[in-house]
Image (tube, rainbow, N blue to C red; front, top):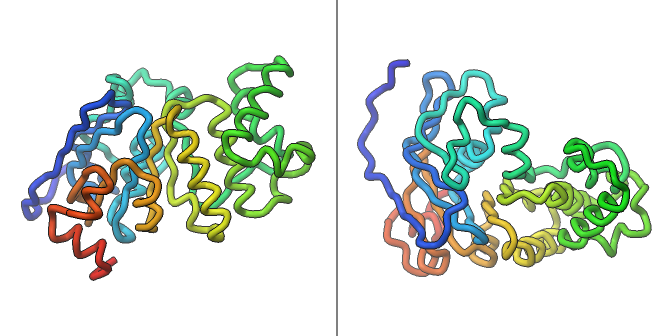
Length: 268
Protein backbone atom coordinates (compact mmCIF):
# COMPACT_ATOMS: atom_id res chain seq x y z
CA UNK A 1 0.00 0.00 0.00
CA UNK A 2 1.29 3.46 -0.92
CA UNK A 3 0.72 5.91 1.88
CA UNK A 4 -0.01 9.48 0.90
CA UNK A 5 1.98 12.28 2.44
CA UNK A 6 -0.05 14.38 4.83
CA UNK A 7 0.57 17.56 6.81
CA UNK A 8 2.68 17.01 9.89
CA UNK A 9 0.84 17.14 13.20
CA UNK A 10 2.69 16.83 16.47
CA UNK A 11 1.68 13.61 18.20
CA UNK A 12 0.35 13.62 21.73
CA UNK A 13 1.38 10.72 23.93
CA UNK A 14 0.77 10.56 27.66
CA UNK A 15 1.75 7.56 29.72
CA UNK A 16 -0.02 6.92 33.00
CA UNK A 17 1.94 5.76 36.04
CA UNK A 18 -0.34 2.99 37.38
CA UNK A 19 -0.65 -0.53 35.96
CA UNK A 20 -1.59 -0.44 32.30
CA UNK A 21 -4.28 -2.82 31.06
CA UNK A 22 -4.12 -1.70 27.43
CA UNK A 23 -1.29 0.12 25.69
CA UNK A 24 -1.48 1.34 22.12
CA UNK A 25 1.40 2.84 20.19
CA UNK A 26 1.29 4.67 16.83
CA UNK A 27 -1.98 3.09 15.69
CA UNK A 28 -2.85 3.87 12.06
CA UNK A 29 -6.05 2.57 10.49
CA UNK A 30 -6.92 2.61 6.80
CA UNK A 31 -10.22 2.00 5.04
CA UNK A 32 -8.72 0.98 1.73
CA UNK A 33 -6.35 3.86 0.95
CA UNK A 34 -8.10 6.34 3.27
CA UNK A 35 -6.24 6.88 6.54
CA UNK A 36 -8.78 7.28 9.35
CA UNK A 37 -6.43 7.13 12.36
CA UNK A 38 -3.09 8.95 12.23
CA UNK A 39 -0.83 7.30 14.78
CA UNK A 40 -2.81 7.13 18.05
CA UNK A 41 -0.78 6.37 21.18
CA UNK A 42 -2.80 5.88 24.37
CA UNK A 43 -2.46 3.86 27.56
CA UNK A 44 -5.40 2.79 29.72
CA UNK A 45 -4.80 2.24 33.41
CA UNK A 46 -6.32 -0.58 35.41
CA UNK A 47 -9.59 0.24 37.20
CA UNK A 48 -9.98 3.68 35.64
CA UNK A 49 -12.69 5.14 33.41
CA UNK A 50 -11.34 6.85 30.31
CA UNK A 51 -13.61 8.95 28.08
CA UNK A 52 -12.91 9.42 24.38
CA UNK A 53 -14.41 12.68 23.17
CA UNK A 54 -14.45 14.65 19.93
CA UNK A 55 -16.81 15.65 17.10
CA UNK A 56 -18.57 13.12 14.90
CA UNK A 57 -16.24 11.42 12.47
CA UNK A 58 -13.08 12.16 14.48
CA UNK A 59 -12.15 8.48 14.90
CA UNK A 60 -13.35 7.76 18.46
CA UNK A 61 -15.44 4.70 17.67
CA UNK A 62 -13.00 3.51 15.01
CA UNK A 63 -10.19 3.58 17.57
CA UNK A 64 -12.35 1.95 20.25
CA UNK A 65 -13.12 -0.97 17.94
CA UNK A 66 -9.39 -1.52 17.43
CA UNK A 67 -9.08 -2.46 21.10
CA UNK A 68 -10.98 -5.75 20.75
CA UNK A 69 -10.49 -6.24 17.01
CA UNK A 70 -14.07 -5.44 16.03
CA UNK A 71 -12.67 -3.74 12.93
CA UNK A 72 -11.62 -7.20 11.72
CA UNK A 73 -15.24 -7.58 10.64
CA UNK A 74 -15.00 -4.65 8.18
CA UNK A 75 -13.66 -5.48 4.68
CA UNK A 76 -10.64 -3.52 3.46
CA UNK A 77 -9.40 -2.36 6.86
CA UNK A 78 -5.65 -2.25 7.51
CA UNK A 79 -4.24 -1.51 10.96
CA UNK A 80 -0.61 -0.66 11.72
CA UNK A 81 1.03 -0.03 15.07
CA UNK A 82 0.91 -1.88 18.38
CA UNK A 83 -1.97 -2.65 20.75
CA UNK A 84 -1.21 -4.78 23.79
CA UNK A 85 -3.42 -6.21 26.52
CA UNK A 86 -1.35 -6.70 29.66
CA UNK A 87 1.80 -6.67 27.56
CA UNK A 88 0.65 -9.12 24.87
CA UNK A 89 0.00 -8.12 21.26
CA UNK A 90 -3.70 -8.56 20.53
CA UNK A 91 -3.00 -8.62 16.77
CA UNK A 92 -0.47 -11.46 16.99
CA UNK A 93 -1.29 -14.28 14.52
CA UNK A 94 -2.15 -16.88 17.17
CA UNK A 95 -4.46 -14.68 19.25
CA UNK A 96 -7.88 -16.26 19.86
CA UNK A 97 -10.20 -13.38 18.96
CA UNK A 98 -13.19 -14.95 20.74
CA UNK A 99 -11.15 -15.19 23.93
CA UNK A 100 -9.93 -11.61 23.43
CA UNK A 101 -13.50 -10.36 23.24
CA UNK A 102 -14.33 -12.14 26.47
CA UNK A 103 -11.49 -10.26 28.14
CA UNK A 104 -12.36 -6.98 26.38
CA UNK A 105 -16.15 -6.80 26.29
CA UNK A 106 -18.20 -4.24 24.38
CA UNK A 107 -21.50 -2.40 24.82
CA UNK A 108 -22.88 -0.69 21.74
CA UNK A 109 -24.77 2.52 21.10
CA UNK A 110 -28.13 0.87 20.53
CA UNK A 111 -29.31 -1.71 23.08
CA UNK A 112 -28.98 -5.10 21.39
CA UNK A 113 -30.34 -7.85 23.65
CA UNK A 114 -30.80 -11.22 22.02
CA UNK A 115 -34.40 -12.20 21.23
CA UNK A 116 -34.83 -14.45 24.23
CA UNK A 117 -35.39 -14.09 27.94
CA UNK A 118 -33.34 -12.03 30.37
CA UNK A 119 -31.74 -15.04 32.04
CA UNK A 120 -30.56 -16.55 28.77
CA UNK A 121 -29.27 -13.19 27.55
CA UNK A 122 -26.99 -12.85 30.57
CA UNK A 123 -26.03 -16.54 30.60
CA UNK A 124 -25.27 -16.61 26.87
CA UNK A 125 -21.52 -16.07 27.08
CA UNK A 126 -21.24 -18.45 30.02
CA UNK A 127 -22.91 -21.22 28.05
CA UNK A 128 -20.59 -20.53 25.11
CA UNK A 129 -17.69 -20.98 27.53
CA UNK A 130 -19.03 -24.43 28.40
CA UNK A 131 -20.55 -23.65 31.81
CA UNK A 132 -23.55 -25.91 32.38
CA UNK A 133 -23.80 -26.02 36.20
CA UNK A 134 -27.12 -24.32 36.98
CA UNK A 135 -25.96 -23.10 40.39
CA UNK A 136 -23.00 -21.33 38.78
CA UNK A 137 -25.19 -19.88 36.04
CA UNK A 138 -27.77 -18.70 38.57
CA UNK A 139 -25.12 -17.01 40.71
CA UNK A 140 -23.37 -15.29 37.81
CA UNK A 141 -26.63 -14.10 36.26
CA UNK A 142 -27.81 -12.60 39.55
CA UNK A 143 -24.43 -11.04 40.36
CA UNK A 144 -24.12 -9.50 36.90
CA UNK A 145 -27.63 -8.09 36.94
CA UNK A 146 -26.95 -6.59 40.37
CA UNK A 147 -23.68 -5.05 39.15
CA UNK A 148 -25.58 -3.55 36.21
CA UNK A 149 -28.17 -2.08 38.62
CA UNK A 150 -31.06 -3.89 36.93
CA UNK A 151 -31.65 -6.88 39.25
CA UNK A 152 -34.49 -5.32 41.25
CA UNK A 153 -36.33 -4.44 38.03
CA UNK A 154 -36.07 -7.88 36.39
CA UNK A 155 -35.70 -10.44 39.21
CA UNK A 156 -39.39 -11.38 39.04
CA UNK A 157 -39.36 -11.47 35.23
CA UNK A 158 -36.14 -13.31 34.39
CA UNK A 159 -37.93 -15.53 31.89
CA UNK A 160 -39.65 -12.68 30.04
CA UNK A 161 -38.21 -11.59 26.72
CA UNK A 162 -35.45 -9.03 27.15
CA UNK A 163 -37.05 -7.15 24.27
CA UNK A 164 -40.14 -6.47 26.40
CA UNK A 165 -38.24 -4.05 28.64
CA UNK A 166 -37.55 -0.34 28.10
CA UNK A 167 -34.52 0.85 26.15
CA UNK A 168 -32.66 1.83 29.31
CA UNK A 169 -33.40 -1.52 30.92
CA UNK A 170 -32.31 -3.35 27.77
CA UNK A 171 -29.01 -1.49 27.79
CA UNK A 172 -28.35 -2.47 31.41
CA UNK A 173 -29.20 -6.08 30.52
CA UNK A 174 -26.56 -5.80 27.79
CA UNK A 175 -24.07 -4.47 30.35
CA UNK A 176 -24.90 -7.44 32.59
CA UNK A 177 -24.34 -9.80 29.65
CA UNK A 178 -20.83 -8.39 29.24
CA UNK A 179 -20.12 -8.52 32.99
CA UNK A 180 -21.23 -12.15 33.27
CA UNK A 181 -18.12 -13.44 31.47
CA UNK A 182 -15.96 -11.41 33.88
CA UNK A 183 -13.97 -9.29 31.40
CA UNK A 184 -10.98 -7.21 32.39
CA UNK A 185 -11.87 -4.28 30.12
CA UNK A 186 -15.27 -2.92 29.09
CA UNK A 187 -15.62 -0.78 25.95
CA UNK A 188 -18.74 1.34 25.57
CA UNK A 189 -19.59 3.14 22.33
CA UNK A 190 -21.96 5.99 23.24
CA UNK A 191 -24.03 3.66 25.43
CA UNK A 192 -26.48 6.34 26.58
CA UNK A 193 -27.00 8.35 23.39
CA UNK A 194 -30.31 6.59 22.64
CA UNK A 195 -31.56 6.77 26.23
CA UNK A 196 -33.58 9.23 28.30
CA UNK A 197 -31.83 11.20 31.08
CA UNK A 198 -33.02 8.90 33.89
CA UNK A 199 -31.80 5.77 32.10
CA UNK A 200 -28.55 7.52 31.22
CA UNK A 201 -27.98 8.38 34.87
CA UNK A 202 -28.50 4.73 35.85
CA UNK A 203 -25.88 3.62 33.29
CA UNK A 204 -23.46 6.24 34.65
CA UNK A 205 -24.08 5.06 38.21
CA UNK A 206 -23.43 1.49 37.09
CA UNK A 207 -20.09 2.43 35.57
CA UNK A 208 -19.04 4.34 38.66
CA UNK A 209 -19.99 1.39 40.86
CA UNK A 210 -18.07 -1.23 38.85
CA UNK A 211 -14.91 0.55 37.77
CA UNK A 212 -13.03 -0.55 40.87
CA UNK A 213 -13.16 -4.03 39.31
CA UNK A 214 -12.89 -3.23 35.60
CA UNK A 215 -11.04 -0.94 33.23
CA UNK A 216 -13.68 1.11 31.39
CA UNK A 217 -13.26 3.00 28.11
CA UNK A 218 -16.27 5.00 26.91
CA UNK A 219 -16.89 6.98 23.74
CA UNK A 220 -19.27 9.85 24.43
CA UNK A 221 -20.49 13.04 22.80
CA UNK A 222 -21.77 14.24 26.15
CA UNK A 223 -19.19 16.54 27.73
CA UNK A 224 -21.05 16.60 31.04
CA UNK A 225 -21.06 12.81 31.11
CA UNK A 226 -17.32 12.65 30.45
CA UNK A 227 -16.62 15.16 33.21
CA UNK A 228 -18.90 13.34 35.68
CA UNK A 229 -17.65 9.79 35.38
CA UNK A 230 -14.19 9.61 33.82
CA UNK A 231 -10.79 9.64 35.49
CA UNK A 232 -9.05 10.57 32.23
CA UNK A 233 -10.20 12.03 28.94
CA UNK A 234 -8.74 11.84 25.45
CA UNK A 235 -9.74 14.40 22.82
CA UNK A 236 -9.57 13.21 19.21
CA UNK A 237 -9.90 15.36 16.10
CA UNK A 238 -9.69 14.30 12.46
CA UNK A 239 -8.16 10.96 13.39
CA UNK A 240 -5.48 12.50 15.59
CA UNK A 241 -5.05 12.42 19.35
CA UNK A 242 -4.93 16.09 20.29
CA UNK A 243 -4.81 15.90 24.07
CA UNK A 244 -5.02 13.28 26.83
CA UNK A 245 -4.97 14.05 30.54
CA UNK A 246 -6.74 13.67 33.84
CA UNK A 247 -10.33 14.74 33.23
CA UNK A 248 -10.34 17.64 35.66
CA UNK A 249 -7.13 19.03 34.17
CA UNK A 250 -8.27 18.65 30.56
CA UNK A 251 -11.65 20.28 31.19
CA UNK A 252 -10.44 23.07 33.46
CA UNK A 253 -7.08 23.86 31.92
CA UNK A 254 -6.57 22.29 28.48
CA UNK A 255 -3.14 22.71 26.93
CA UNK A 256 -4.23 22.77 23.28
CA UNK A 257 -6.29 25.49 21.64
CA UNK A 258 -8.28 22.91 19.68
CA UNK A 259 -9.33 21.23 22.93
CA UNK A 260 -10.43 24.52 24.47
CA UNK A 261 -12.37 25.47 21.35
CA UNK A 262 -14.18 22.13 21.30
CA UNK A 263 -15.04 22.20 25.00
CA UNK A 264 -16.35 25.76 24.60
CA UNK A 265 -18.62 24.73 21.73
CA UNK A 266 -16.81 26.59 18.96
CA UNK A 267 -17.11 23.51 16.74
CA UNK A 268 -18.34 19.93 16.88
